[in-house]
Image (cartoon, rainbow, N blue to C red; front, side):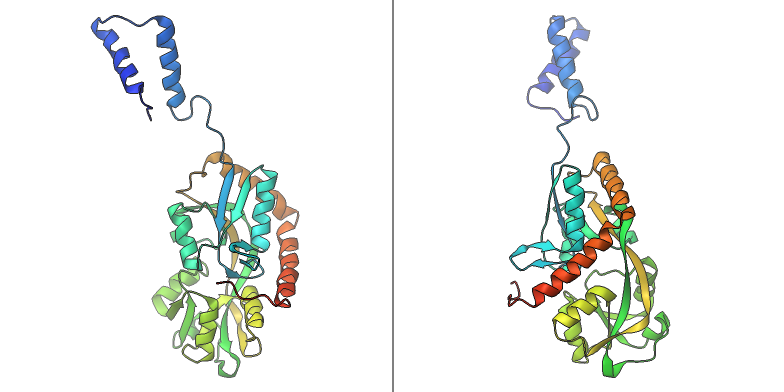
Length: 295
């Protein structure tokens, strides 16, 4: 029980009744009791549900998420639009902020400085620090990207053992592949996909692990699409989820329940796929504009 200034003295005064000291008037005792009850968790009127949420995510993830050229402090894309639609229907405000590379974005949510990740795979380490909002709102495949003229025979995970690969810091490709990679693969981690692709083209690595759709979109944006190719089959196919930090001040049963309810409704209506296609066109249109890369 959290006490405000003066409560401790009032409680001491109440305990003195047991030892024969002058008793307080009954009306005063009743008022003090009501005050104490209101301070107990679950009793009395709540201070009100959290009305503002802050989210973040992978900033190199078009058409799911990317930095807004007009306001680089914010992220835009299909995931951001979906979260904003849910928040609007719940009467909440949400900002989807750029908090740095994907590894730092995850740390910001883990510590509770940011409430939500707008799109993440389900992994055991994240389950220890975040609640997942079910169902997943989109499925995405992760693939092995190679330099087109340096492709090697590949039929599955085992064929990666003898090659040096690249990936993003703290990136995940599903629990099963992550465990296999940790035990069997040699992977160099970098902060951004742009750096990973550059190392691949310079032949400092032999492959890059990343998702098919955003990997292709970013390769095209960087002018690398003709130099890169994705090997088949995919290494994994995983669902994208909203995740809510255990340390978020907004994480309560009401919010978790409402997020899950709205997500179920929107997924059933096909809203995430519609937003994905809309943002793919949005991304393409932005690439045709002479907009500089945000700092």
